[in-house]
Image (cartoon, rainbow, N blue to C red):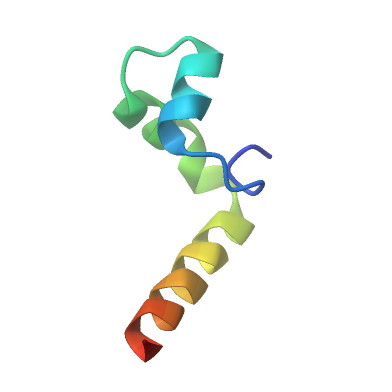
Length: 49
């Protein structure tokens, strides 16, 4: 939910007590379909600029 709320990965990692954002990304990024869609949408917006 924090990823979908657009929290920075470092803040999520720290709030969960992980030492590395890589651990957080590996553990949680795959469970959010909305996160993947947001990433694609964000990239599309960047390319349009």
